[in-house]
Length: 166
View 1 (tube, rainbow, N blue to C red):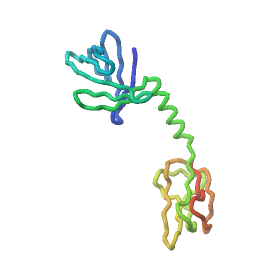
View 2 (view 1 turned 45 degrees about the horizontal axis):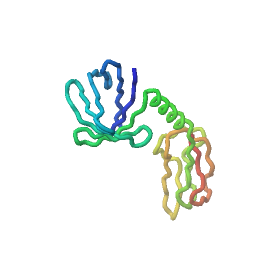
View 3 (view 1 turned 135 degrees about the vertical axis):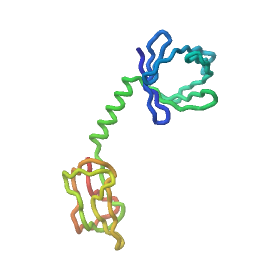
View 4 (view 1 turned 180 degrees about the vertical axis):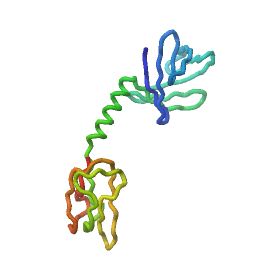
């Protein structure tokens, strides 16, 4: 059985070809046949309904399909490649490091989190005073604060590393 994950507009469909001109889409089984008419044009029969489609490759695993005049951008990966891509993405997200930098020159008024604290994306991590205004600096990602690189009362320049989040 050949199994694929087809992504259309962020929606993932599990498509499996089971042989004998049978395919299943997210568990629902269909009878099909496919005939090539020319380079990119095909005649597709699904449960006795006929469709004229064109399909052309648009990169490694991306295809542009035209079905009944509607253009559909798709990404097709084997189930194994999809699983590998998900594992790599999860591992990268799990072990990524984000450095929060000062968006402007100013003075650190209050540090709200310390090394070891868990933060969620959007949590306030410190207050930076700039031009007599208090600016709430928020975490751009969820994770754990690995290091606080500044102290309260410290003057900082734009672009200086403030915190490291893992």
